Length: 366
Image 1 (cartoon, helix red, strand yellow):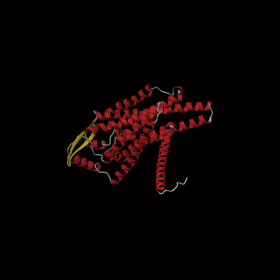
Image 2 (image 1 turned 30 degrees about the vertical axis):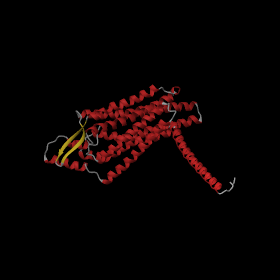
Image 3 (image 1 turned 90 degrees about the vertical axis):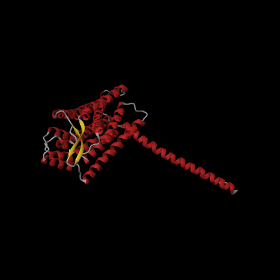
Image 4 (image 1 turned 60 degrees about the vertical axis):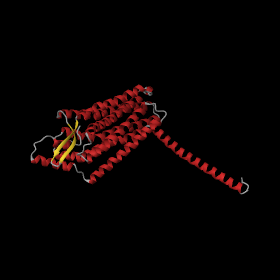
């Protein structure tokens, strides 16, 4: 997978130490180590928005599911797992990607060099695989409605497969990364770089990520949702009721939105990786790609983790009801608390009046 340091990597490979190469390297590093203030502020603002929405939205989903006393469906566990994955995207992907764009030549240490890309890849991979698991679960519920209550073994095995698959496919991210120190005319710099045994293996890995984490889940989810829509349409034609028609329209709308948002969110970033790994870009073209295209592509991809809790929360009747019930209970508690305080104040005032009138030898008006 191409990284934000790929442009620099091209210039940090062993080269003949002539004056021209040193000058080119120095100019590149000076350009890459500085970022216009306005550009940096715009990046920070845009990434901060999706960071906050991602954390708040997914935390609300997690709390709603954990506080519910009737979380028994597999769908609840899948949505909870998706919220956890998207929280990890918010924690590991959004802030560190922002830092890498604002400070392209920056290393956080040898451990972070290996761990952060691995954590980022696992979070994204698990999120994508969970979306595919939700698609399968919805397909199962519609095609086989009699088996709506799935055993614990069912959803536990699927979730275990989600995380094992995500870790397995992302392990190479940690293996090929190393923190390397480079001696430049102005001093030493440390850069986290990818070192593949061959360029062909790097291309093969990028193609595998495209197939396993984008095209594969997209095609499988689209096929499952298509079968769901076809099945609901058939039931609508045989049971021509208002409820069946509304359910068909609502589910179809949700399925189309899920597929379209997932496709649009991730296609720019995967396109950047494929162009960089399989295209023959000149150094200036790589600089344009990393300085202008990658920041937007990463932002758009990570924004999908903000949309997921809103989308599944809006279309999930159970989650909506829990959220409303939580707000109602909170409102009732505030009102009840206010009434109690008013009653306490009234009792205190009444006692004070009684005491005053007894001391004044005045009868109490009833």
